[in-house]
Image 1 (tube, rainbow, N blue to C red):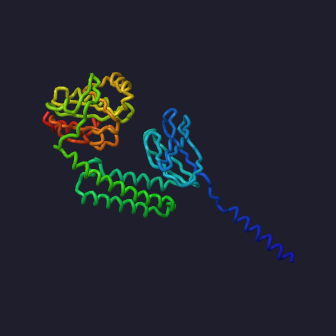
Image 2 (cartoon, one colour):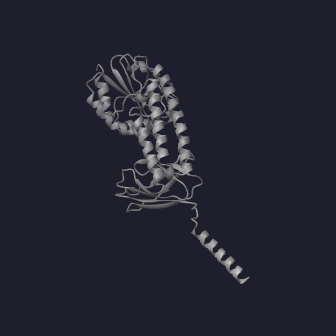
Image 3 (cartoon, one colour):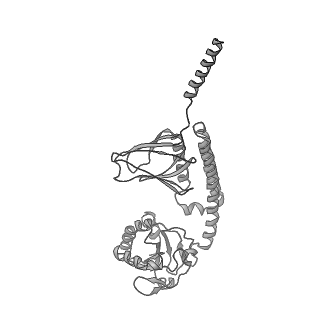
Length: 344
């Protein structure tokens, strides 16, 4: 009996030892790392688009950071310090990010580094699809389909070649996102078919009537056409990318001052913010013709040009016909190539 008891105790002890050795799944993810030459008071921001939630990670004065996140579900974040990059996290991960400087995207090590690298490669594949968004969707359908098929095959191969180091939740989420991406791209191709048909070069521009003119009174499209090409800037005082273009636009206006081209800026600020619009024009010393649209994004001119985001730039010929409904921005060197190709 004593021998049997000893065997039972030994077996129990063995089971207990084995259980102690089992790895307990952590209910949190760890993200840590360092940033060389950090920006004072700049934090790392993680944004979950699906659930519209943000996570802020503090960075100390030496550029070091560490945080633990308790996640309800595995999540792909849009992460940013100064650059923007995708980041996948799930409970149990211990991911280390190292920034060689404050402007670069980080390199990853530790558990979760493979999914990080896959997302970086995915971004490169997406970027290789097109340099010019409008041109990509304006090509013959056969060319569009061919490039999309190649992208799909390359991305599926990327997942397959790393599957042994990727968890199923990540793979499933990426396969789902690929389906959504294809639907979005197909929808954009159909939308551009419609846009290109209605806003083809040489067709009369959509009209606008009685927009407030900074210099006094109101102006319509017919008031600014007739003798010169027109470069239209669609903008707003609250738009950061729009304000970024202002110095480039002012330089452009000076360079082409003696050419047969007018520069017209149309703000889609709310009419209730007219004073704010006028003050920015004064403060920034904006030149050219400055107009304020009537109904913000809902203005018919904006709708007729299918404008969903600003800044947007439009070129018209002297008669008010469309030259380019989505022209290069002032900060893009190729804009001068376009303008120099006009009879101005």
